[in-house]
Length: 454
Image (cartoon, rainbow, N blue to C red; front, side, top):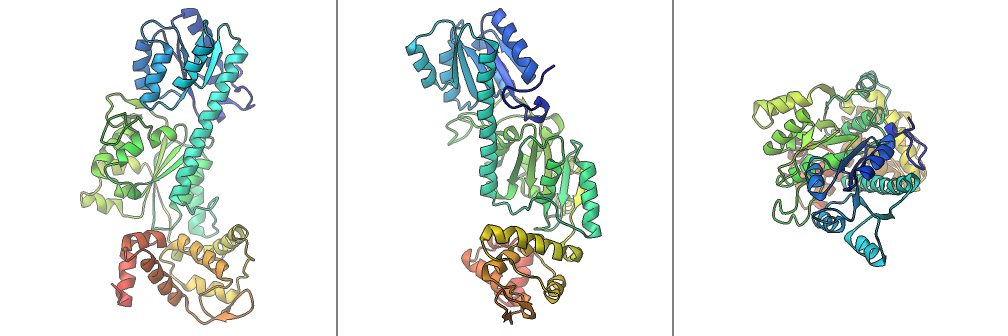
């Protein structure tokens, strides 16, 4: 059976999943469209009226509705107006055997994506569907890209390592990636948990689907359920239209829940149910919707301690811990420092449009001796700052600047100056400063106490 989609030349299995609902009161037309579309798109459901279609739409988030205008009861255009008012963002192709210019204008005003006159050929319908699915794919990709920009992810493209500790992690990533197992990634802040999660996604069978990251600590407790599961119109004050959640946008791909320990208890309970039943219930809805999403969670906390302190659900912890990966701190993998530093210099010098810097052996030795409390993220920020300045500001006559001069400032002094400058920029907000620095609040408090600047 030919599973390729019109115009894309790729197999359906390599594409994110799409689903279609056909609504027409002519059994022959329903049968014709279901046969023609199911050969290429797989999931094609049918209904003979709006009344039959409504409960189906509550059970599944369809990417496309093919809708006859002339239906018993409510017309296709009337229902389309209601769908758009309720916030349905999917594509709708209207079809009819009787149309004039006024009907076409009404269809466009109602929010139709396309308009086909009966009788139409299979090729005409397939081309219309392909155009809609291309728009749907672009909407999902644009949404994911916007979230990545908002999250200001600092992840590099791939796991860069040569130490025995990280080579072992890479081998485990290769073994885990082909499965659909839920994965819990632990480690200090800045150790590269999102990098590992992205690597799992890229090496999995879901690589053609989206990778959707969310920082649980960055979302207000009262909004996180809506962000994850979506909501219906009027579900809460300000919900003026329906909205799909991140599980919807991650369909066929991977949802990365960073800082999972920050998730409120109520949301933890609902997440547990989703992981067990593979169904979500939008806020304010009575309907459950099936989802096909792999979940990867990450935290810099000890979840066992969180469970013992009753701050995290034990059952959710065990459900997330199907496979657990613990990323080592940078101070425990000094063999990777030179490799990472050179990688960051090569990748960022071009992006910053500045000349690269040479790493001397004594400079690398001093970098290896530093404990890097912010781990790989701190190293990356240090390299970026050094490229902008034109010299490695970790001090001594062992580190030459781009112009041949040397800095007399120690790395510890640079760290203090950088942390205090960040605190000042954050108006003394230590939580925000710690987030920007890539270190824990506890580490920041300890350093400020040592410097007498609490």
